[in-house]
Amino acid sequence: MKPVRSVKNQYPGINPHLHSYWQAEGEWSSFHTRHIVHLADTLMAQLRPLGYITKLEQSLQIRREKGGSPKSDVLISDLNPQRQFQPSTTMAMAQTIPFGELLDEDELSETPFWAVAVYPFESKDMQTDAPVAWVELLSPSNKGNSGDAQAYQRKRLDLLINGLVFIELDYLHESSPTFRTIFDYSIGHLQAHPYRIIIIDPRPILEKGPTQVIPFDVDKPLPIATIPLNAGDTLDFDFGLPYRKTLEEGYYGDFVDYSQFPLNFERYSPADQARIAARMVTVLDKAQQGIDLETGPFAVEPVALEEALTRIAALNNA
Image: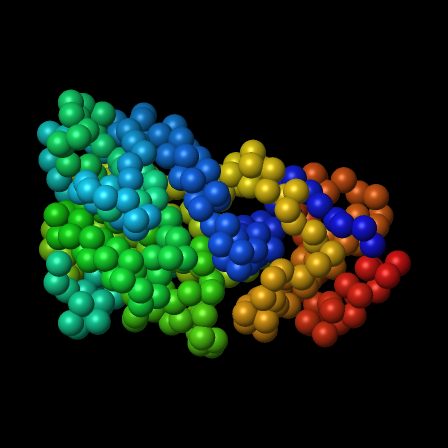
């Protein structure tokens, strides 16, 4: 079968073909740059009516450039910084724990990719006024045990100590989580998930600050998560919206051949391998029938991995 491609992402969430390629070939930065812009724009559209704005900043993550204080991927600011603070009472859609439980007991202590900062709309000087929230999209070079990863974690803790809501997006299944208390998918832990969004509200006390740990799997939608702001304000944000926008407007589908397995397919769990294979069966079958893939993604019939592999081989040889 000739290559099977689609501008439309054929997965309802993270595209494992692309994410495996980007991690294997060191191509992550292109996606990172585009996606940060789409995150900022999508957040701005929903935050502005609430009295907040977003601004692109330099992130906490290292790109070997000199100088400057830590900057975020996406920074959220309050348009009315005088409003009275009230702790958020919104519960997470997944697991909510005190921030202190997310850390090893010895980890509480103490600039770049682009990030997004959220500010109050009435903030007169975004260079000096404190933002409300900080959003980081993790890159491969800033995970694991490298010096860059350790520097990122120290800067993250600095921001939390200073009271900023911190949102960490981890769409990288081949490297360990930035918190050691989270099960590690990259080493095959049975209870681990490949992707996660972590939202930490350090107010009023960091160690007890409510932390949402929202894991999700291959072939599942990106989550809708509640972002705490100021004075009890919250935003229920669909992280799938900017992700789809990035993939489609960047025409990243031109780099995906659904007739071929993702690079390093074996680095996915058996359950996720089965999900990927079942998705490939559906896409190849639709393409063979002449159905326009741009009308996808399509419903997938669950199928055992061995059967899916057999069907993929048959469809490729048809």
